[in-house]
Length: 104
Image (cartoon, one colour):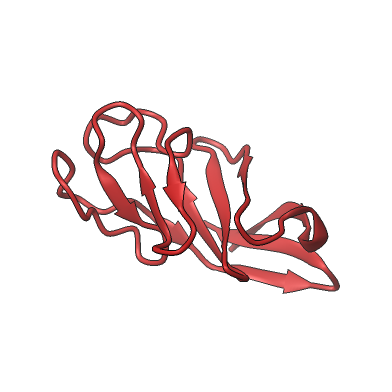
């Protein structure tokens, strides 16, 4: 399994996110109240960029900026139409203060 280094945990405090280049699709790493989640930057409705949308830290949800589909950052599940397929999520861990994502 490949490993993607996101950066220092101190640079990703609660309520923030970071978009990380991962070939072929970028990954958004979100800090929801101290819990870290990683999701692919691709809406399952039309393959548009997902992580440019608004997101809610309390609910750990992101809204696609194109058509308003909402996704759960924890599971990748599509929560509202027009999307009905989930998006990929990735395991996140912190090692020695550095945030890392496991990608395959």
